[in-house]
Amino acid sequence: MAAEFGRLRKGAVNTTVAAVVVAALAASQAPGVTTDGAGRKVTTGTQPSPDAPAADSATGNSPYYTDLPPLKSPNPAPSAGTTVTPAAGEAGIPATVLDAYKKAAASLRASKPGCNLPWELLAAIGKVESGQARGGRVDANGTTLSKILGPQLNGVGFANISDTDDGAYDGDSRYDRAVGPMQFIPSTWAWAGRDGNGDGRKDPNNVYDAALAAGHYLCRFGWNLAEPGDLDRAILSYNNSQDYLQLVRRWLDYYRKGTHEIPDGTGTLPTDRSDDAVGANPTPSPTQPASPSAPAGPSSPAKPTTPAKPGGSEPGDGGSGSPKPTPPGTTPTPTDTVDHLEDAGTAKLTAMAGGTFTERISARAETESGKAVAKVRVRFTITGDTDATFSTGEKYAAVLTDSTGKAVAPALRAGEDTGEFTVRATVVGRTVAGLDYTATVTERAADTLARTTDAALTCVPGGEFAERVEVKATYKGAVADKVAATATLITAADDPAENDKGPYFKDADGKPVRTLTGLKTDDKGLLELPKLYADDTTGTFLLRIATAGGATLTVELKVAAAETSPEPTPSEEPEESASPSA
Image 1 (cartoon, one colour):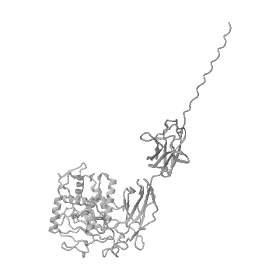
Image 2 (tube, rainbow, N blue to C red):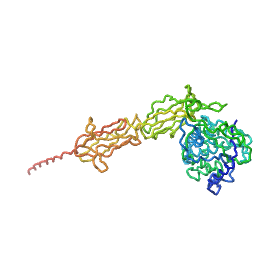
Image 3 (cartoon, rainbow, N blue to C red):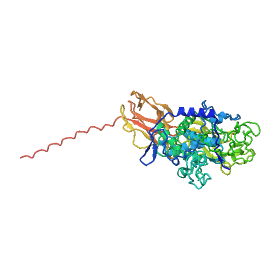
Image 4 (cartoon, rainbow, N blue to C red):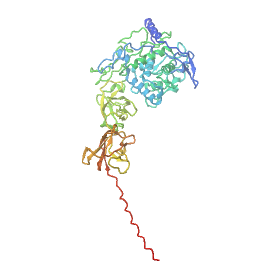
């Protein structure tokens, strides 16, 4: 049976407090609605448009949860073996849901960078719309364990939107209902839906699909969400209510201060809704008490006061070494059966700075008996002081295990920072020990150096060399760019000590230097040395260039006096012949 939103009436005290808080938040004003160049209605400020059709919003202006953020700032993530308290569950975001928000924001950064969509905005809307998919009750693919449906939009206390999908998404062939963790109405989902988890489907009940669709919806008019005005317009386009705007803003600010990941299914269930004052009869659901007056407590199977523990050593407590407990009458998900992660044959991880690691990290999810577990989401996270990323440009990646239980991370891409860093593999939605992989980034290197010309390098004593020395560096036949190099005028081929006579370079003050450090090849692998000069010593001298990786090249320099041409010998004048006698 599909689970609908519970519709609990707030007590008089709660109603008064919420009204006072929301009223204090609602301070901005705007002139109303204008039409942009494409004929779309947009608000020119932060006030909702009184004449904007409900069907033009993502949710059809459906009811939303009004629970306010905790008064205290988010606490650090609870450690393994500790109970996820209600306060921690309220502040944290379930693992798969959080992964979906971050993945969607990363996708929008690539496709619509000018939108500047923060993942925290998706989290704020997801909190207000569905309580983070009802506390993260999703499977490893990100699909809700039961449908999340808003009330019938039949005009009784809500908008009047007749059925547009023949009940395909909401199961209602008379009226539309908001569907899924981001509460899209079917008519909006028809054009806004996206495939966020790559399974070839656009499912509003899947948090990956819904989060990506929400991101594109918020960015659809070219708004820059880094600008407060555009941010407000985008939120109001999702649900046309000033109270909604202020509430989403509150959660956005809260999550920006920091939050933490909690296991799937351990988030707190929201209780207060914007339609609690509506006089419609509440519709019971499997996860909410049937009566508004029914007490909530540990004895209620619908809403436990203490969510499941993320870890521990006692049998059956959901920690490492024991299956995660599931409610009676339900079938454990594959994630629930995971006991540990094993390395799936990852070879040594080494790459040169700026390069791509040829080896990829593989992890296998297994039960306690060592049986492979398919369809489990494994998150790979780069940690440590490094600028390395995955090929996606991100520091994390979530991958579904295949039929053999194996998840293969995207290729690692080295940055410029050298040294070791760690990639940690964890099971999304399950607290078991992580698996750490060590990766090493070495400095850029070259294995071959060659001059770019074969022109002789000669100079007269006290003069300067007309030709500059230029070399090209390669590594395994490819251009070796940004490779560190040194150049030294050495004493002899078998004596690399710096020569104290002969050719030299000049430093910034014009003084002779015979060793240059801090050199680097350019993007084409080329390195041109500064101009060389000669002192008064004549002879043949050696310049040795060396790079990281062991490539060396020795170049001959000759200093010799200029050759002089011999003075021409005056030719003897011919003797005058005797003139004939008369």
